[in-house]
Length: 177
Image (tube, rainbow, N blue to C red; front, side, top):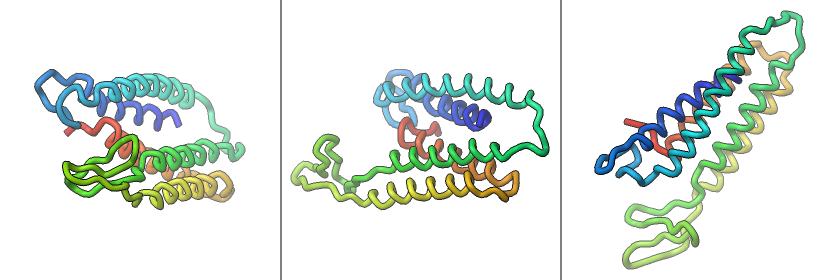
């Protein structure tokens, strides 16, 4: 858990720093400077907290002895992390989409161009539900599968978390090129 928090926070710092550090007149990963500065500043603030918290959790966790005959509480962290990643991914998938040449009106959800406007179609709805259901199903499987190999829940959690962090950073501040 601490390692995921530390790596996710470091990735978010790297992605948002490109936008925060942009000089006027230049282009960042998401366009001209200043366009995403508010979102990038908020992501940077949360990411720095995540890096510090992840480092603390990781150092404390590595110093703790592990009982080879211990309980199955090690499944809780990865299971809840996968469920949380599924929820976050379902919130980040866009529900409405417009074809090329149209922009999505943020308030009324209309596709707008210079000469035409119409209600925006919603092709992302099934993907939102699918991401939520898959995250919940895999997370619950990790929580309640008592005979899971010891390495499987952490590996699944890291892969799901890394994919969710990458997609979230791409949608929010853009990844630096």
